[in-house]
Length: 104
Image 1 (tube, rainbow, N blue to C red):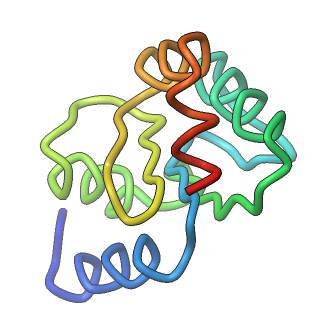
Image 2 (cartoon, helix red, strand yellow):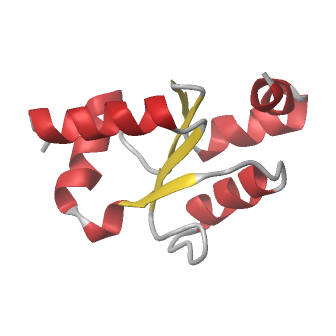
Image 3 (tube, rainbow, N blue to C red):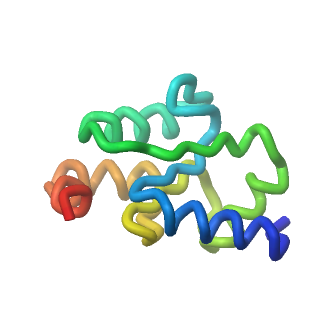
């Protein structure tokens, strides 16, 4: 559930970190294929990544979905903007948009 406190934490996190991913597991130990693929793509750019394990908190797992109005995880934010999930990240990586966005 997206409480005011959780909403503030999410907003602060995406404002204070260039790349944020809400995922199943962690960057070091992804717990699903989509999270693993998203992390692999992001790590290939050698940028700092702030990861959040939604499996550690049901409130966070549901809250991030409410925050973005996006039904699945992983959820990726770059430069304070919601990018989407693994499929969109993969597409942006393939067409060069992601490299451009991460360099800006």
